[in-house]
View (cartoon, rainbow over the protein chains, first blue to last red):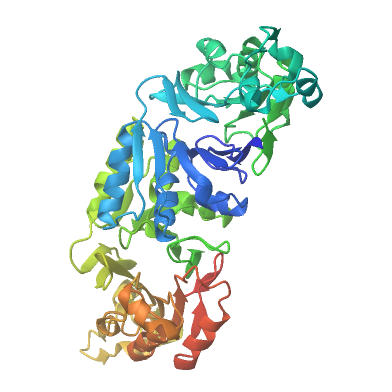
Length: 300
Length: 300
């Protein structure tokens, strides 16, 4: 399982029962939280996200609609007796805010909160099964996008062929890693004769808040699913530029030129009550576009 | 119109779709907000509270379930272009938290936010029509209750009698204030002969979070409506004491001994899914008890 569940798809001011930005990415037994607008802990309860599975939280930038729900979530985790480490990746200023809020409440969290300030593009988390990296976007304050990647999957053993070539079972793990096999007679059995390619490793890029920025094309090149904000419809490109946001067409252009598998757009301005036109405009440029709808899980 | 609308009735952790503490008190054209737990701005939208009518916000103490929604509400007011002054009455530490959060977002509010630190019991707001005072409660951190009082209402002119006694219209305002009238002949016309008593001035006391504290009896003596927290049912009096909270029976005992008109109980612990037993236990001590239910307006 690799998917993203939308907990909030609206821009700054909550409206029409749409909430500020928060997304949960599930990758097998891992649950990552990306951004945490006000009310995220209620949305987590509403959509039955397993809070205890969250070990990593990523905050893109310090505009309130992307982090005002964090202190409430952390405090509740503490009240519920959490003991597991929680890793928080965010712009440096967030640490003081959290510390101050815990101090005035005379609260000590019962779990280690490990703060990782975002300072440069690169890998944040690296495990045998997945990695998370951050990249800069162009917004009014320092802002970061995130890419979560599965690691390259092992190849599959072709059970008929390995017997046919008489390859010892002890070598199977190396076959899965792509190695060729040499027989005692010195004959080379090429890996692709006895294994099958597994499904390609998948990836999810979250572009946070950003104005149209061609550098995102390289940064998100070929990801399986790209989330790109589309605060405005295409007629408001000027306003988008002035406010460091993007339009439908700009988001879809990035997706098209980055050659991604699918595009998800969100962070809709509170000025729009309905969202159909967002889909129409983006799909005209990049057909594989979905609207980020709260409560829906999009497979990656 | 004098009433209180409940926006949140739960204790620390949101549960069963109950929200953290927030109440709106409406007194004619004034709207006061008392406490502002996470999600209050969404609750304000949901229950169609007129945000622009809020000029005074009172925060009882700096536990997150009483103020984590404040920064979001203030930020949204700014984004919506508010220009009117907003007066905030809260423990001193809140100012730094707000300032820090505005600073990291590089935000200047477009309206004056006037911060009044709560430091001693007494009058906070005094106008010809109403007053708001604060009083200390006993909680784990410094905590304040609030009393909103209508001013004593003017007496009503008895139109038949004032003509009968030939009192000049220029003296009517003084009659409303309770003065007697002396005729040119030196005859005293007693106020109660020519005026009628108006309805008595009403009052609402919000007792915030507190453990059972007999000093609250004097502090809330005779109010029209008393809100007293009842985090636990009566069997958990020991836990209530340890956590600086109250039980149903304790809340009702304060109401009874303070001789209030009605009691409203809230701040229910997340351990309780249903609330009927709260009503039963409190009413056994003080019959005029209501449960604080979200979205309901209780007349004062």
